Length: 147
Image 1: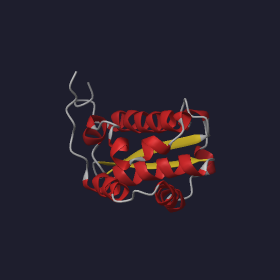
Image 2: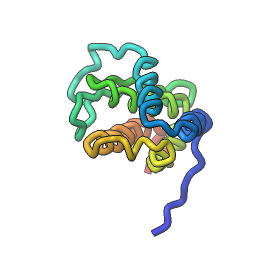
Image 3: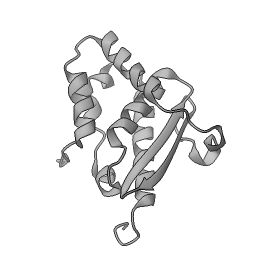
Image 4: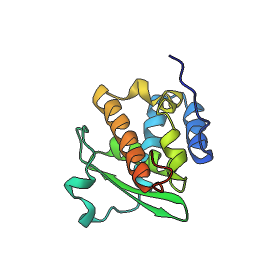
């Protein structure tokens, strides 16, 4: 089964390229933690079960709103590495139209090299976070495009 790879949106492509240029796993983790630090504070009021990512070992919360045809995500996690993954995805996907987000495949994580250094539970968490962001984007699509 061959999968058609959708070209990465510019912000995500830039992030992936930066990871590709870093061969040292320690530097990759530092870059990932940098994304965690860049996440804006997540509203405590949004830390509700309906915003919680299912299937993550750590607590992960995500919300999405639509602004000017693009999706704006917010997220948080109680674990720094996971929070970095949330930040990386949010930074890479924010502002994109929902149609573009739902067409992406998560295999770009392999290009970052992070997949080899993530524990199986974190790797699984990454996919759960990614699919949750896609589901949130899908919910924001205009009904005529949402089939």
